[in-house]
Amino acid sequence: MQLPNNYENKVYAGWLGKCIGVRFGAPLENWTYQEIRDHLGEVETYLPLPAGKIFKPDDDTALPVVMLHALKDYGAEITAAQMGDAWLNYLSDQRNTLWWGGFGYSTEHTAYLNLQNGIPAPQSGSAELNGKVLAEQIGGQIFTDIWGLVVPNDPQRAAEYAQKAASVSHDGAGVHGGMFIAAMVSAAFSESDPKELINTALKTIPAECGFTEMVNKVKEFHLNTPNDWRAAYHFIAENYGDYPGLVHIIPNAAVIVMALLYSEGDFSRALQISNMAGWDTDCNVGNVGAIMGTAVGVEGIETHWRDPINEPWVGASVIGTRNLSDPAATSNLIISLGQEISGTGRPARSPRYPFNLPGATHGFQSRSHLGTVVALRQVDRQEKPALQITMRKLKKKGEARVFVPTYFRPERLSSNYYGASFSPKIYGGQVLTADLYLPADAPTQLQAGLYVWDDNADEGHHAIGTPLTPGEWHSIQ
Image 1 (tube, rainbow, N blue to C red):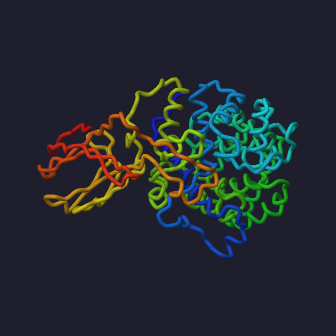
Image 2: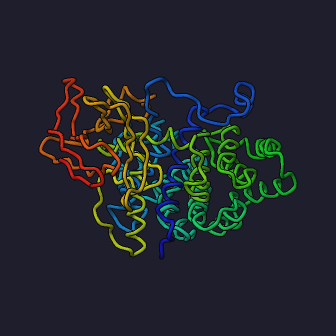
Image 3: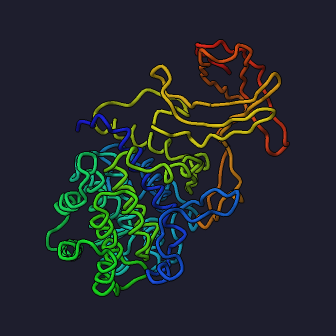
C-alpha cells in the first residue's frame, strides 16, 4: 500500500472532522427532529459550553483511540480476538469509554461482560449469543472511521479492519454499518463526491442485506427529490423510524447517507443536516465529519469549526496520560500507524509537540504580564514547523507566557459521564527541551526560558532566561 502525498493533511482533516462532528452533535443527543426544529431552527454552528469548561470525554472518540493503541500493540494482522483483548486491557469494568447500561441492555456493556467471562471476539458480539436487536445497535459504526484513516485508498481493507473491530460487540447490520463508514473514509482520500463514496462503500458489504437495501432506498429518494433534505428525513422516519432497541443502526445510518447526499460535498452543510435530523446526533455527525473532513482536506474545513477544537481533547481509558491529548496528537498516532502498515516503516521519533499539521497548535495557551500575546498559530519557519507566538507591548520588563496543560482535574470538564481520570504528562527528573527561532527583525534584548507551574502550590519553577539572537534558532532546556 502506497500512502498518498497528502496523507498527513487528509488524516488530520478526517480526525478533526470527527472531533468537530462529535462536539457539534453532542449537545443535541437524544433530541428529536421536531424538538430541534421547534426550539433551535437552523443549527449552523456549535452550541456554547459552560464558561471555562473543556468539552467532555465522549465514547465516539474515546474508543477509537483505544483501538488505535490495540493496532499499535498487535500490529497490522490484528485479529478480532485481540481487539477484544484490548477492551479488557484499556477499559475498566463499568468505568471509562463505554455506556455501561447493563447486560442485555447496552450492547457494549454486554460484550465487555462476555469478554470478561472468557468469550472471545467475534463471539462476544454475536447475534447468536446476544440476540439480533442488541447486535444491531449503532455502536458498530460509530467507532470505525479510524480504519479508513489508517489504510487510505483501500476501502476493502479498511472494511476488513472495521469488520473485526465491530464484531467485538456487534453483528449483522451493526457490523455492516462499521464496514460502510470505514470504506467511505478510506475512499475519501481520492474521491470527494458523496455519491461515489457511497457507491464505493456499498461494494464492501453484502448486496442483499438490509443495510444495503436502506442505502439504496435513500439514494433513490434523493434522486427523485434532490433539493429537500427535510422531505428525505420524513421518508426515513416513516420507513426506518421504528426499529427495535435503544439506538438502532439503520435509521441513524440512513441519516448519514441523507446528509452526505444533500450536502453536495459541502463539509458544513453535511454536518448541519445530520445534526438537525436528530436521533443519535454526536454519533451521526461525528461519522459525517470524518468522511467529509477526509474528502475536503483541512483547507475545506472553515476556521469557525477548527478554532474551538484547537485545544485539549479528552479521552477516557484507564491510561491517564493518554486521556489528555489533542486532535493533532491523535492524528500523528494514526499517521505513524498508517506508515507502519504501508511498509513505509516506523517513523523517526518526533517532538511531543511537533506542530507539523496545518493550523494545529496542540492546545497551547497564553498568559501575559506587562505585555500581550496577540496570536498563536502554526507556521513553517525555514521549512521547520513551529508555533508562531506574536507579542506586543513587552517593553523593558514585560513578560509573556505560553503554555500547554500537562494535567487536568475532572472538574474542568463540561461533564464526565465516562469517568475520565488523568495522570501527569511530565514528572520530576525529566528534561524539557524547546527549539525557538527569533525573527531577524526582532529586538535584540529578548530572553526565553522554560517554566513549570505547580497548580497545587500555586507557584512556578523557572529556568534562567537564555538571550535570543535575531535570525537564529536556539535550543533551551
